[in-house]
Image (tube, rainbow, N blue to C red; front, side, top):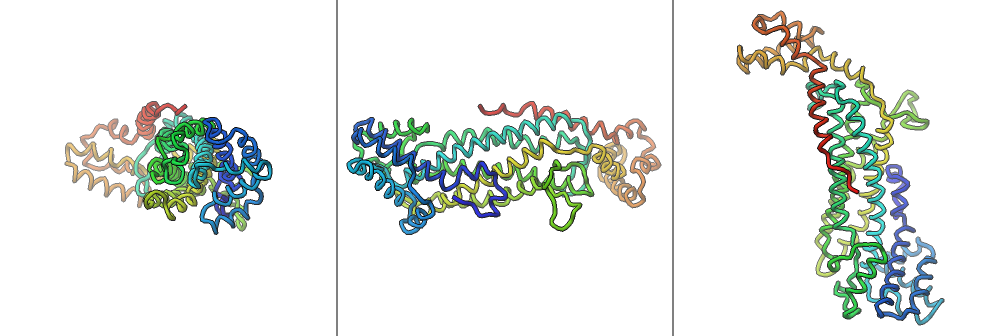
Length: 449
């Protein structure tokens, strides 16, 4: 699979290689070599056929672009691949050529190749997911008590801590890693069922060959062929899409916090990173951009995989083929975003002074709810809320502190000055958020082994 040029700019080189055309073809050929060895071990084919088949498999099958052209006409990549492999084996040993792909079917070799590739893809994802989780956990703990604005509906709301905000990034990632480990165990299994899933051409040797083949490829055996049972596979794809969404959340927050007029965080600076072709002053958040892109595209790939779950009878016509075309994109999106964010967060620039300054610019309005709570016993909730709404508007309009206006208001005459000061304590509000954040960080599930 060769991704389009623009898709490759959002993907990692490592994941692009996992699903490269040559990688998928190599995985298909490894299936054919392992199949011959497993069948020979069970006495299904002559032992003498194994070496020629293995040698031809490891030698490759020539030009892949022409193989793809042939597959367009045949309707399956496996058909021309097996044809070429058979010819290559015949050149080595004519009698061995009769046992190439014996008892198997196109979907067996292709699905198993995709399982092999997906195993590598998930290893890449898990490594960078672990790295990002570790980085964010450390960042959250470092800034547990650092005050910053919470924003709801894109507007200043109350005071939290930066550590509290990061928890909303890292907790979904830790849960995603755990869910991916479970989905991986369920989905990454050998596909081997023969023409209609019964392994009929292998007689009573079918189950034994399947177990040997799984062992040869270091895969878990399946309870049976899952040619048209795509639930575990689709569930894995959906978990990857969910990960894309969680990464997109981080990307959105980083991009908003990095806006120059907010200026609370910035992605690390490096030559050639985040520049503009026209504006020399620009410092664009490219990791955030990559994560947001993954969140936009990932769900659509997963939706196609879900839509392909209803193949007709014992072999899909179009559904399986659509799934194959969409599957690599899920992993390209997810890992591209993961790798970009892991790198960016490792060197994230945090401006704590700007965070506090942005709080001060609200003139104390972010503490309106806490101040209103002091007045509820004497005024009632509705009147207290109305008074604070009016005074907050006045504070913003006049550029004065809400606390000063409250001190001058007759409604506050019975309120202790210390209680009012406590309601407007920036650091106390951040500390309370930090206590909650620390508790959630400590509760996060341990990393899967």
